[in-house]
Image (cartoon, rainbow, N blue to C red):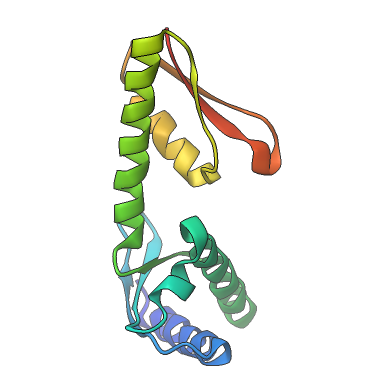
Length: 153
């Protein structure tokens, strides 16, 4: 990753945090995904504020930072923001929720709906079950009412 770009992201992030009145330490480097830049934030006082309900503030910050960097560079970068390992913890929670829903579907023989997942989390569950030949997943609904359906084939 180009050091100049990392410096621009760092300065832009500091500007954003200052404007929000948030004190946070940042570590910026390559992400796990190809061509992704991972921004790891840590704040003793403002972690809950940075993450928000089910990571909504985290996603908004990611979008805002991406737009600010684009405005300065004229180039889009895949920036992923995490706060004290929230994304991994949430991924484990979503996978556990999906396992419980599958157990319930097996016990009742009925499809089970999981609501209030982001599009990224729904995709995560689809990928989690993609190699299981006994399980079928799909999404139904629109907007905030969109749900993930887990059923047996």
